[in-house]
Length: 272
Image (cartoon, rainbow, N blue to C red; front, top):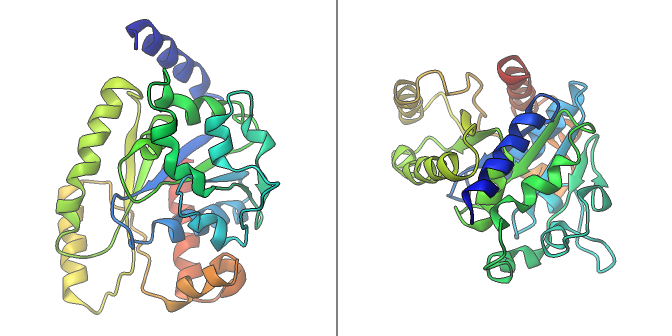
C-alpha cells in the first residue's frame, strides 16, 4: 500500500475529527472479562444521559446483538455485509435497540480476514463506513472480538480511543502487553491519534484483598488511565443478557446499574 494512500487517509481523519462522533472500542484480547457487558450497558447509560449512541457489534459470536434480543435473520443485513459489499452503507444496516441504535453482527464475520485478504485498504473498511454517520451520533461504541485479529484492527483504526476491560486477576497486567503492542502498530501505520481512554476493572469485590491490590497496581502502572468507577460483582449483569435488555431495564436498582451509569458519567466528564 502506498504512503500517499495512508497520508490521504490520515488527512481525512483529521478533517472529520472535529465534527465526528466519538468512536470508542471496548476491548481485551481475553474473553470473559466483561467486554460485551460493558459495551451494551455503557451504550445504554450514555443514551440515558441524553446522547445519541450507536453500538457496533464487531464480534462474530454476536453476543452484543443477542444481549439486546437481536437475532440473525436471513433477510436482515449485518456487519459482515458491510465488509463484503462495497456499495452498502452503514445506515442501511442499523437497527433500533434499547434507546440507542445497533449495527448487528453476523457469524460470517468470522471469515472476513480470509475473504478480504489482498484487498487494498482492508484495515480501513469499518472506519470509512462509519465516517458517513458522523453527524448522526455523539458516541459510537464498538464491541471488539476477544482477539487482536483483522476485525479488531479495523475497530482500532476507526476509533479515537480504547476502553480496556480487565478482571482483577494476577495475570491481567501481563495479558495487556499484546494490546499495547498492536496499539503501537496501529498508531504508526493507520491511526496516529489512537489512545487508551482508560481501563475499567470489572467483577470487582472490595472485600477481597487481591482485587484491591491489583487495582492499586494498575493505578500505579497506568497513571491516570484507570477509571475511578469499578464494575462490582453482580449476578444480575449476566442475567440481563438472557432477558434481551440492558441492566437499566432489567434491574435498575442494582450495583450493576449504578456502576454503569457512573461509568457513563465519568466517560462524559473525561472525554465528552
